Amino acid sequence: MPRTRLTAAERSDQLIDAAITAFSLGGYAGTTTDQVARLAGVSQPYVIRIFRTKQELFIAAVGRACDRIEEIWRAVPDPSLHTLGHAYNELLANREMVTLLLHGFTASADPAIGEPVREGFGRLYDTVRELTGCTAEEARDFFGIGMLLTCLGAMRVVGPEAVEPRPWMSDLISTLGDGESA
Image (cartoon, rainbow, N blue to C red; front, side, top):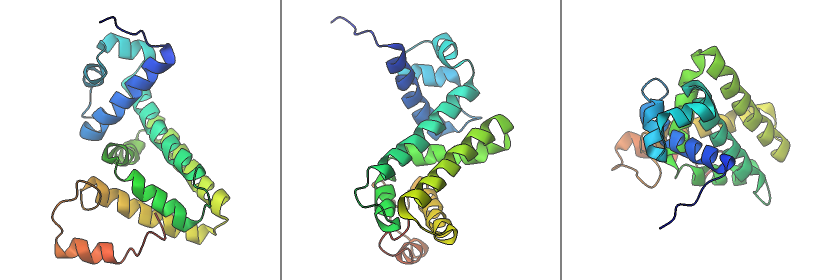
C-alpha cells in the first residue's frame, strides 16, 4: 500500500500528539526525543529538525493542551462557570492531556518552560473571566477545583479509568457538587 506523505504542518501535529503521550508518561526530564520519535514513527533526528530541542517540543505539547482547553471552552454555547466546568470534566477523560499539564506546571522552574506555561495558564484564566464575567475570586475558586480535579484525574480517582474508590476519595468527590466549577 502506498504511504501518504504528510504536510509539514500535519507532521508537526503528529509529533506534538506523540509528545503529549510520551511526556504524560515520563514527564519532561524522563522523556527523550527518541521516545517521541518512536511513537510518531519517525527518526529522532527528524524530531530535532522540526522542533530543534526537547524543550521546544515539550513547550509545544503543553501549548497544545492549553489551546485544546480554550477551544472547548469557547465552543460552549452558553458559557458560565457551571457549563465550562462540565466541559472541563469531559476533558478529564483525556488523562494524557491533564497529566501533561501537571508535568508542565512542575517543569516551570526552568525559566524557558515556565514562561510559556504561565502564559498558557493565564490565557485560560482570562478566557474564563471573559466568557463568564466572573469575579477574580470566582475564577480562583473555579481554577482551584479544576486543579483538584486535574490531580484526581491524573491519580485515576475520577474519570473513565478510575480506581476502586476509597472512603477519602468518596468524601472529597462528594464535596465538589455537580460541576459548578471545573
